Image (cartoon, rainbow, N blue to C red):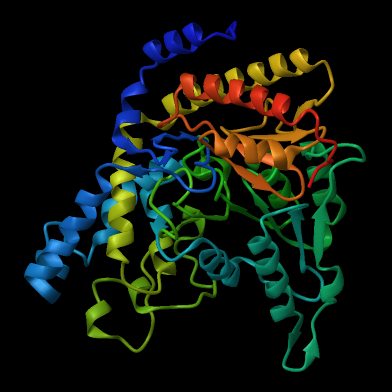
Length: 440
C-alpha cells in the first residue's frame, strides 16, 4: 500500500473500509464540545451503543422476576456464561470448552498458577519478560514466595526463581531467539514461562507458538497474559498448544471498566484429575451442583476452574461487544488494523522528515510484531506533547517514563482519525519547540 499524507486519501480509505459502519455502533466521548479522537482502546475500549440495552434487560428481569430470573429471565442467569462461550472461543482460537468468562485477570492468573505452577526443589524457576504490567510481576513474585517454603522447610531459593528477560544492549524489545535461548539455558530448572502476549508498554507482540514449543521441549509449562492481545490480534491458543492463558475484557473487548475476565485451559488438561485447583461451587459439575455434594466434581474444561456464579451485568456488557466481534470477524479486523497502524507509522515518518531530527519520534513497537498499538518515544518534551494533543481532543495515554501509547482500534477508529492525529502531533511539536525540557 502506498500511503499519502492528505485528508483526501484518508477519506478515500474510509469509503473503501468494509468495517466502517461498525464505528456507528460505539459512543465517543467529547472534548471541548466535539467528538474526541479516541486512540486509547488499549486501556479502555469504547462503549457499544447496545450495552445499555443489554444491561437494562437484566435490570428489568431482576425487577420483574427476582430470584426466578436465574431460570426465567429472557437470558437465564444460571447458564449466562454459556452465552459468551462460542464468541470467546473464536476470539481465543480455542475449542469452546477450553474457555470460560469469569473473575478478573489477575485473579484468573493466580487460580491458573495454582494448577500450572508446581515447583519443587529442582524445577521452580519462572521466565517472564522485562517490563511486564506490574500486576503480573506481583502475581509471579507472590506465587514464588508462597511455594518457597512448605511446612517450615525451604523448598528452593526464592531469590533466583524469577528470570527476567532483558532486550539486548541498546535495544528496547525482545528477540524471539533470545527468549528461546534463555528457556534452553534454564531448561532443567524451569517450571513456567509466563509472558504477556503483547507487552503493555512497547506494544510488542510475542511469538507465542515458538515460546510454547520451546517451553514444552524442556519440560516447562507455557502460560500467557493476553490483556493486550485478546480482541487485538488473531489468536490460535489451541493450535499453538498453550497450556493456559487469561485476559481482561475492558480493553479491546469493550466490556467496560473493571469488566469480567476470561481464561483458557488447553483441552489436554481438561480431564487431568491430578491437577490441583482452588475449587468453588460453580466449577462443580452442574448436574450435581445443587445437590451440594461433599466432594468437588469439576466440570470438564475451563469451566472446572470457576468459583462463583456469573456476574450478569458485567457479562451483559461483554455480550454486546462480542456480538460485534462475531459480525466483524478477527481476520477482517486484523487486516484493517495493519492498514491503520501502517498509515500511522507513515505519518510519523513524514513528521520526522518535516522536523529533520530536531525532535525525532521513535516508534519502539516492532513493525512485524505488533497489533494496533504503537508506542512513541520523543527526543524531547514527550509529556508536554501529550498534554498538548490531549487539550486538542486526542485521548491517548502517557506511560512513565517516556512513552505515548496510541492504539487506532479497527472496530471503531477511522483513517481520518489517524490523519487528524498525525497533524495534531505535528502541531504539538511546533508548539513545544521552544521548550528545552527533556522527557518528564
